[in-house]
Structures are given as C-alpha cells and as structure tokens.
Image (spheres, rainbow, N blue to C red):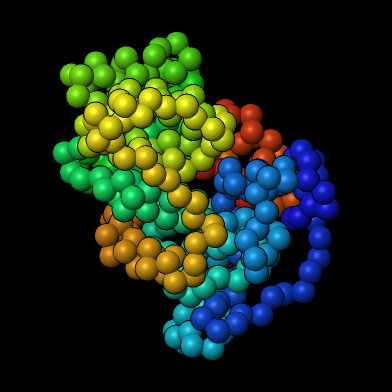
Length: 326
C-alpha cells in the first residue's frame, strides 16, 4: 500500500512492485502483519519523508517469516518467525529488514501482537531508559497513556519498579491506563495535569517525562518535573516550538533532550536491539508484558486504519493483516 501524492487516508492505494532482494546483513520477511504508527500517518500527510535509502512504502514494524537471507546472515535465520524494526516498507507482502534488528517471536505470541511491538519498544526503551536514565523507584510521566507508546511505557516502567503518572482524554482511557498499571491517570480535558502530578508527588515532581506533545506542554511539563529531572521529547503533535523559563530550568537542574529513531544508523539500531533482547525481551517471553491491541485491518484497508488512528479513539495498537497466520 502506497500513495502518489500526500493527503488524507484515502490516498493510500495498492500497488505492485518487484519482491526486494536482501543485501549484506539483511533478511527478506514474508510479512504476516504490519504495525500502524503515527509516523506512518505523518509520512502520508507529506511531513515525514523516508530517510535516504529507505523504502518509500509506509510501515516501520512487521512480523512474519524469514524466507531469504543476504550475505553474512546466519543460515539458521531462514524460516524463523520474527518481528522487526524497519525504516520503511512494512505495508507490503515482503519487506527487507536488517537481521540485527529482528527479534524472534515467542511461541505463545500471535503474529498480530508481534507486529505491534518493535516501533514502540525500541522508542520507549531508548528514550525512557537510555536518554531519560530512568531507574527503579523513580516516577515517570507519559502523555497519551493509551497510545501505542503510552501503553508500552506504562508496562515497561512498572516492570522496572517505577511509579507511573499518565494523561488521557477520557475516563474510559484513564481507566484503561490504570488497568495496565498506571498509578495515576489524569483526564487532561477536565483536570490540570501539572496540579495533579505535583499533588501526587507531594510537590517533588516526576523524575522523567516522555513527551510527544511539545508546544505549550513543555513549560507545563517542566513545572511538574523534579530537580535533576529529565524531559524527553519524541514527537511534536502540539507544535514545533516551545517557550520556556530558563531560570526555572537552571534552578532545578533539569535536562531537556529528545530523539527520532527512524534516521539513526543501522549500527545504532543493532546495539539498541541487542540491549532490548537482553533486558526487555524476556518480559515478553514470560508474558510479564504484552502489547495492548486495539483493532486489526486488512492491508487493503490501510486507509481505514489511518483514519482510526487520526480519530483518536483507539486504545493500544492498530495493525494491518497482510496474510493469515500459518
């Protein structure tokens, strides 16, 4: 599923292309399912072009079976069921991935769930635990608690013995976040999250904030961020620019940082995948953590999947079924 010109969900349409061939270090995945993520929507709108060398086809995560391997890839990868982080090309029957960016799907896990993991897991792990230096006993504030990122962040933080505050846009979503383990869920439409967060922390503030809003949320975030707290931005849904009080930031020794994952080097992503495999993947293997699933659409209905994401009513991950599981 691709598009000729940027636009609304209806611009997505099927196309037929040659099956790609794996190069050095790559595998060819016969795709079972593909995850739908906010960057896919932004790419379709024309604001997030793929990095140089990446497929122009949307889709940043897939699950499926390895059906061909390139030079330098261990032969035992062939026929393995994997999920993978990819830089594009996921909305297709076949997709290339670097072998080092693949994770073996646990036997108990269905392929739709497997496809819902890589993009959010890699993003949350890097930004909360590597850039945000989150530690057990600390408190995390994550906005959009029922989004794919939010549901993953809540579960990972709780698995590593953190307290979690989150925001959501309805009581239903707040309840869903609490069921996942959030210690406090704030309806940002009816309550002031700064006031509620500071009240919850006894005025101390949270230690880490995972923010995908930016804009005028940044200063509000800093107002409920603790001394030596870390503010990590991963999206700018509320605006590209923020005005902040630097005197307050200095007095509390706060850290502002952020990142985008898609354009990072293959080597960086391989190191990240290795760390995830050692420290986070066991939590999926023993079922401590599982992706929260919203709805599955056939690949041909990718436009409808995008419309659901843009509508904002989803709780958890939206995925596309490319082919029925074996």
